Amino acid sequence: MTDEPALGWESNRRVDHDTVFLIAVTVMAFIVPIFMIFPPLPVETSDALRQTHRKLGRPAHRSKLPSRSTPEQQPQQAKLPTIKSLFIYPIKSCRGIELDRSRVLPTGLEHDRLFTFAQLKPMAGQSGRWECLTQRQLPLLANVKVDVWLPDPSKKSRELGHSDARFLVVRFPWQAPGWRGTMHFLAAKLSRGLSASPEKQFILPLDFPSQEEIKARTYEISHVKIWEDVVQVLNMSADLPPQLAMYLGAKHQLALFRSDPSSRRQVFRNIAAPEDTLGHESVVDFQDGFPIHLLNLSSIQALESLIQKDKISGPPEYDEDDWKSVRFRRSGMPEESSVFTVTCHTVRCKLPNVDPATGVRHSVEPDRSLRKYRQIDDGAPRMGCLGMQLCPVFPNTGTPAQLESYVEAGMDVEVLKRGPHRYPG
Image (cartoon, rainbow, N blue to C red; front, top):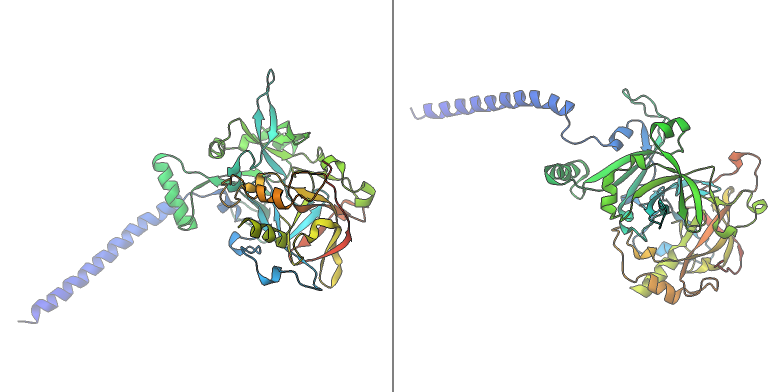
């Protein structure tokens, strides 16, 4: 008699497990198809592009740029400095993209500064004028992330087929109000990790569109003022979400422009080497004034120690101040090289006061220390200098293909000529 209750209890438990299993299978049979038709996480533009494209650049967690000084960055006798990292900024003043290798064009690194934000500045008695925006006016541009998506020949989507189009995806922090914002918050955590924040994104064509596409997407030819120049550009604001202006805190109408290849600007005050020396006309897109900016990590760290971009490592701090001409080349492979004329010092404004990781502006640094320790150019009195401006040199100019070269991380930096500089202030 003592055994019968135990046997009955085991039998009931087995029946309960079977019942739970059948119920779970039944529920899943209904839920899985629903999730397939209506995904619990929103499908982003980037998710679709992954089927046919690849994203340009290195992930942030795999950056070659060290967060602190390392022994290999210290000056080493009888050893050439090297290129530590390469960065492009497809949209001026927004988050950059780190590259291992880049094509060099007369305008600088490929895909660099092709776009810019601008605001419509009111003018008395007139309709207003578009003026270029940077982190000087809108520090939160530092938090706007930009991805370049290029066609991947190895990928072909069954639904989308193969695409040769190149795209720019722009992402910025944004959480909608109310329950929708809560859903966006949860979706960000589930899809991109616990440290992720909700974002809004939009997509643009990377290449200058055809006349048919301009008309179809309601783009407009316009003009924008950048420093001393007013240039013809393409207004692509039809694709701009209104939430971006709210996030950035723009006080006036916000617009996004793409550089027009037929209307580029001359290098700042036309002080680059003559065209017959460079092998091409010295022009830029939305760079401040010159095609390429070079920074020496040793110089940055020397300045940081007092306070308490291509970036190179190895030479002594401020050694680059008198460079006039440089060659980037692979070690032992002189035929694979790129030559640049070093045009002038980089005269610093207050933009570096904005922390590029957060978009928060410091009230005085590093501008105060730059002015105190780096007043080195008689052409820019009371201004601090850090870095050098470069223009590419192409010795052969017979075909468009000859107006390009390549640079990549790890290349040696060979100084071909030294001499004094004076900024054309």
